[in-house]
Image (tube, rainbow, N blue to C red; front, side, top):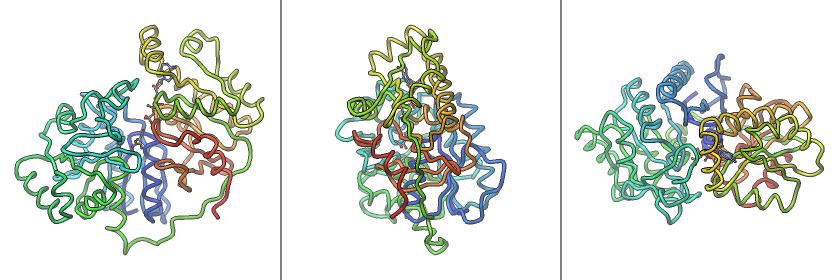
Length: 415
Ligand SMILES: Nc1ncnc2c1ncn2[C@@H]1O[C@H](COP(=O)(O)OP(=O)(O)OP(=O)(O)O)[C@@H](O)[C@H]1O
Ligand SMILES: O=C(O)[C@@H](O)C(=O)CO
């Protein structure tokens, strides 16, 4: 294994797996820290953690465990993958995890770049934009778990860190890898270890990737991985692996309340059987995982069960029941429903939302996820077992027709 990656959630890890596979690295996603060695043909290993919204100490401990395992597999460089919308709180977990990994690797000059231009995430003057909006005006300020209320990544990250945060401005990135390396030197000399890097185009990310050759630790969204495979080019087999689709029943579970998911749910509701699960019904016990799975298994077509709701509804429900209580209850609900669906014969499972997908994948506990073709930017089809394929969609990814498209691609072989 050449590149060792640690993802702070499951959908985000599959996004990274997608980028690396498309760039020609044979990539496997692991569900948590494996208790077995990696297969010898794996060139990039992504250890997917569910560490984005857990207590800081736990996120650090899990990430260091993942690092130990990846080091044992012989990795030469490490990548910490977080969300392209920098999902975190003033306490963490991005800053503390990045600092702990940097300490363990004795790394200085650590790039921090969540840019992912194809989905509209760019970093300019240290600020994160989602399309033409600053992060804190993009809808992310309403996120149920990690409301993003500051678009200045340097300021937000500094709140989470022990050390100071530096900057690699766009002027250097546009000037190429040598200018970026020179800027990293001067920021290092000024005592800054974590360096927020501007990037507005894929070519900027490739420049950062080139500049990062030989550095032990890189951090960012999946975009930062665009340029990394080239640094290993002469060590790669050139065979990313063939994809085999899966026939059989398909179903969708959506716990994501993000803007893109709500549009996908609205579109799907008009075309196929869909069942809404409200927080009140879940908390009162009026709906159960068993009941919802039975309903889904009884439908023709592509059934959807969703809790996706608008920000006002989410806020009101959180006020009534408590944010953590609801989050835990929905996670348990989606995990149990997924288990019942797979036991009931579903072979193609589509999930929306990072926390939701994490709960589902942990419940199904596949040993590894093999990355297949891209469904929409940032979302690959994946094989989770002999008879099971999955698509784990990040909240804000995918076009309005994502669900139907995902079911189709999960069912088809590579051409
Ligand atoms: N109807 C609802 N009322 C209140 N909270 C809800 C409701 N439905 C879902 N939630 C909460 O919203 C959160 C959704 O998080 P999740 O990570 O699954 O989606 P996302 O944030 O859109 O995805 P991503 O992390 O990929 O951006 C969960 O914590 C869940 O408990
Ligand atoms: O980077 C992204 O936006 C996604 O891969 C993700 O992590 C969302 O949960």
